[in-house]
Figure 1 (tube, rainbow, N blue to C red):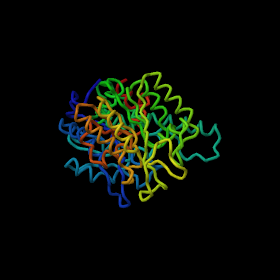
Figure 2 (tube, rainbow, N blue to C red):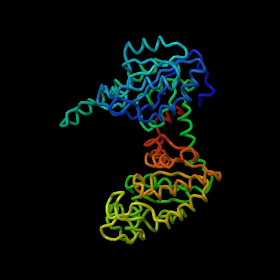
Figure 3 (tube, rainbow, N blue to C red):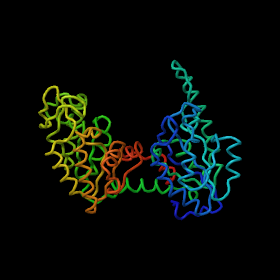
Length: 419
């Protein structure tokens, strides 16, 4: 497989798919440029070689052309990050785009307009009436799929090489993330540095881990993490369940959980998970105590009790001190660690202690030589809030893409490059 380091971009145009889906305020100012900064090493390598860059990205979920989702809003900041002027064309297909790409000189950068302004990027029809019949829907889908091929071909013809550095969209079989790769020979398509790091980090946990392996799965619902849990059971030595989903397990074992988050329709599933863990000799670690509150508020009255003895009218919002200590000891004895999902309502200062204890234990384990991967929006928010992002092995930018990797799925954006 081709790599960025081995490829010489001198005199070549590279179509680089990035994830510049950054948050903007009401004045169209970027409020967090993390994703843009993450792509800089890839962009700078191509420019240093003497290549030119055609950047493709999406922004938001437009239903067509919408000014608030235009990539023109990111051009000025990208110019500042790269230290050079960046060109922009207000479309992503058509004669104006072909002309702008053809005129691009070595060392220059061109940003195309939001790829999702066209239905062909995602391959999904738009504008169908709510009462559209099955035949009409099928015809619309067929039409957009046919035009998607032309859209993809147009993008590919702009460049000599294709670089995918958008791990956050790798789970989508879109024109610019998967289909376009088929238009390039194997030696002319590759991962960007960010994408490569993401893939290697996931594989260190899921395919080539140093044992013991510990996965910490938190969040609110068992139903949203069931596929992840089932896949991890055959790969880990320790599985820690925390957050709101722990109360479903507590109730499944006959406990009282008050008004805590609990999925009554997942009680049998929780029992099955516990039985499967036992069968596979996986150490399933569940919280034994929790911090409870009489309302969902940072200013609520609080107390501490057993996870299975929560009084009526009270809800569990964080790990208790006993559980935090037990979980931390398991984490610190691990050599490979995956954290997805907080241990409590960390957004409230009075209920962040459990998540902080987990984060601190991961930091200590990492310092002692463990490999730690943090992924999933809330876990990333946790590690950033506590200031530990630079003290763990890798913080994923992937979101949904990372979750699908953990579920064991093959991502279209990765397969398209690897073949």
